[in-house]
Image (cartoon, rainbow, N blue to C red; front, side, top):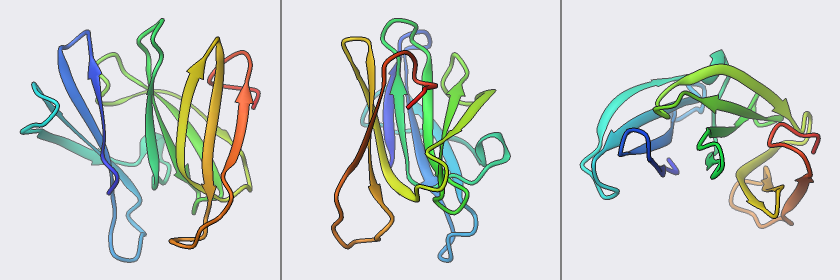
Amino acid sequence: ERPKVVYNSHTNKFVMWLHIDSMDYKRARSGVAESDSPVGPFTYIQSFRPNDQMARDMTLFVDKKSTTAYLITSSEDNAVMHINELTSNYTSFTGKWKPIFQGRYMEAPTIFQRNEKFYFIGSGCTAWKPNAARSAVSTSSIWGPW
């Protein structure tokens, strides 16, 4: 579900992250693949739980200054968002991660940066029923405070 692709200027590869799950949503894993082209074909690498945590809806963010990439996931049965720092090849995790928005129950995350500020937009967990977007700003770092 919901594949996201970013370009890695260090490896000259396009890296795809996607939500991999079972029909009952108990697997809650992230899958990763890479390609020489943004339209594929992609070579599947593996799936796992980032830092041994659940991963459902997700987004990718690449910091333009540092080229560090992050996988942001809905976790803990969607009660919390996790920011997971990726390795320099964008296909695994450095082990640095942080839970944010604890107890907020959100999905469909996106993060972007403008004028040194980081912006988060997400959705409440109402499945396919519309709901008001939720947003937050971090003035210092992707790690917060939000």
